[in-house]
Length: 241
Image (cartoon, rainbow, N blue to C red; front, side, top):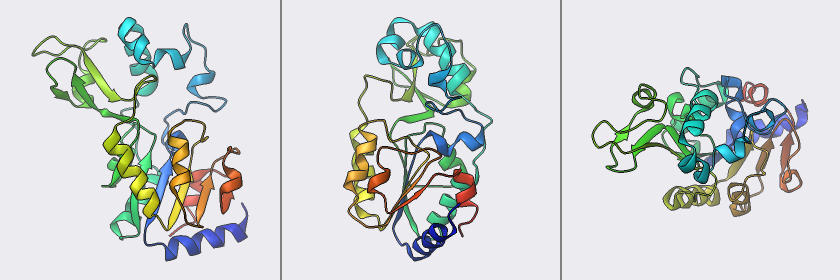
């Protein structure tokens, strides 16, 4: 790890008053949750159907049995715990230095760590709703139901409140995320390949000069960053106060 760059990051974090963190799947891999695009990620495993197809709205509607089997086996990790990244961000928010977390993850680990202002671009596994009567179900309630879950009140299908391919993002969530990024004095982008749009385009909303990218591999946006780390997130955050 480049010690000179680390000292600069430490200074920016110490001076930051409106830090915003933008994170992807790599934030939660150290909590045991698989990512999508790495060598061991979900997209590089072999299934009867491509994972990108399974987690599309069309597939969900036409093949609910396969969808829910994949969703339960590969996308739910109910015993996962927050790691040092989640905990450090919650600490900064409590200290009044972190303005918001913007996340592409659906695991709820930021909230489990104590973060309050979290914009979940792709929804959350902890929220599930009946598509007919709109009754809400927690993750534990969802997991206790049949493989293809139906509402005990009305018989409607219960859908996880996660954004599938072919579905749009929640406009209120995206508005809040963009406003936070625009207000940031330090923007940390971590654990994301920055290949998913429109989320990756949100970096363009930041007009400051303290943009930090932390990812194990290079991203298409490295060239616009003021600091770039190709290191493990946990190793970087373990050095921050």
